[in-house]
Image (cartoon, rainbow, N blue to C red; front, side, top):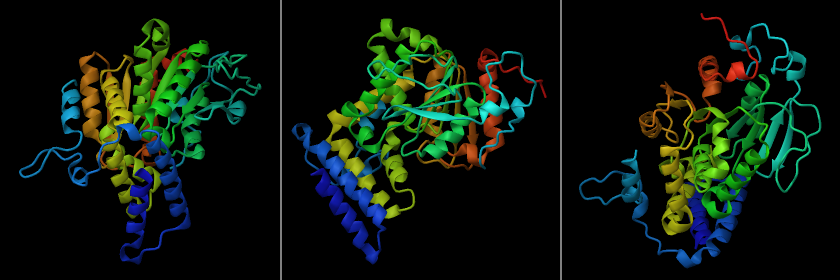
Length: 389
């Protein structure tokens, strides 16, 4: 049913007004249809009949003559709970102390990558060959650097992630980027939860990584929720991992209500008709496969709002971002502040989703470094405090 629905939506939108769909878009749509169809065949037992009426009312609040949105009931319950990168950073223009963990300028220009798993990539300035035990994901020889755990946005390109990674590797950090695919997002039990388990295995078996900085983008907030859910089931085992985190940064964090908006835009960023088709399928998917998908999104969101990570947080948002709007981020902020978590909130009038660094580079970096400094992270890795302006 899933592949039939998506194929129908694809051809219907392509035929409308005789528009021409690029080959790449058609190929991507076909790939999605096959992948989603495969997942649907494995979950037919819990499927419910498809209805057209839910799409228009999905996220809308109740209005006269209209029913509740698809997730209005469950969401209402948990809501109550709660230009290109430059190396000459002004914040780093200071003399380094002897034996600083921050690499020399010459070494900082060297950056290597190592795929730990299909969904985990390490960025490091360490020139030594990194050997990883494939069973435990433990490094045979630790790099000796602190770590940034970076949760990527959906469909992020390596060249873009590298720019963010370089901010930290220039200060002596290793950066572990965790990324998920659309298929993994749609089928959590076989996708995002597997990635969450791998991430925990890596952190558990590489105890030398401390302090740890959490830097997440967009759907990375959901992925972190999945990680914390697994932690919560065995705190005796994973509690020590939480103790190693020093601070967290969330850039354009997206809640579950934004999945039908963010998923189509990430896959078809320049094709509005394909966005509309995939948005309709995503709505259908979240209703039809409630037990296989939506319930997991809701539990992750609840965990993210209540959070096990009690370290200071920094949020980057913009007023014109439909995927990670200030409203949903403010709700997280309120819940965290009630839990005595220090939260810094940076909001711009106009910016791009997960693209604030490009649009507001100086402000972004200045706010980021102030946050790292206030949390004692820079001092811990050997970067001297800046003189007060």
